[in-house]
Image (cartoon, rainbow, N blue to C red; front, side, top):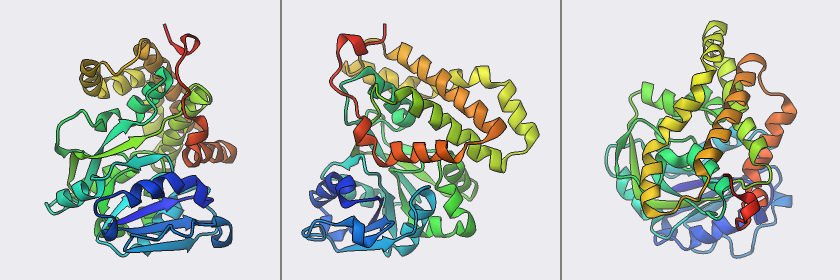
Length: 316
């Protein structure tokens, strides 16, 4: 398997590399690091130890990250690629579980995602909205698709996208929808467990808004004006759709007692804010500064991770 990581400095992904070293099949991993400058990367001297290979690909700009991720896929040599993030940390059996699943006729295997900073209602709300549909608490089985990142793919399925790969690896649902249209099959494997860090109270509203803005802006480039106006008119229903998609993982997590008080209020706020961003995206698109701000959240999410919750951080 090849793991694709986009970063500015090695320090940004050091914890991810450490978790990859802990994999039971670390010796079968090719790690592909895509960065603006090999000189500025400054990797740890022991970074490559234990891996089949560690490749550093210099790519002029990682803002936006989608073209850099696509370049990493093209530079990879393993038949299975995993699109990692600077703030997602796989458990030791992660790679082994993904590769076992890929022995079956699955083109996409989605791991079970866990909340890696569960000490805040804000973190839980962000986690559920972004990855609740693929919570580790859900059963294994064939699914319609997954998120764009934190997913493993048959490399050939991605390369088959040719000229649209750079665009499809951006925020939004283009990649899973395109793969499904081409008959590619997806499987959910909760045994492949990965912890995801989420934005906490600081920056939470801004990130929720930007997440919607990026989706709407991406669709603006592909959809007709009539279709976008239809979605704008139907926007009062979007929060309902968002919340309905996470009802199942909510029930599963509530049974474990993991969810904090006020989670429903936080989710409602987040759904409304995200919808506002989506509507702006449909009508006007995203400015360069907004896109860059979202990329910073994605690259340096650890800076915005939730602190231990206090009474002042609880949503009534």
